[in-house]
Image (cartoon, rainbow, N blue to C red):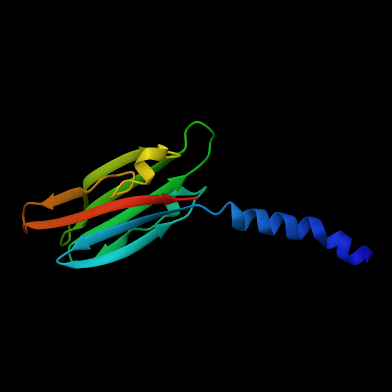
Length: 133
């Protein structure tokens, strides 16, 4: 019985972590194909790699809860151009953390429907993101 009681704090912490899991889920559409991309909170924003969307765009989400009062959800969209230019930032957005309650239940989440254009190849990427607590 003592062993079981000794493990109780560990189980409590683990279950609290599961109950407190937060994600940002984005619906990203390019060329008629939709990808669902999720992000969890990170303490190392520079380690978050972009995700390829088709052959043209790169999409990167950074979800930070800390430091308190400075938490944010940041979305970056790049165009993956041929060398030597490489990836070029074409869109950057920053949203409050936590998102306002009313914006989290709207049709297009807390971001609204966003459209990003790349003029050289005439590409359009659309995305919207929702926050789940």
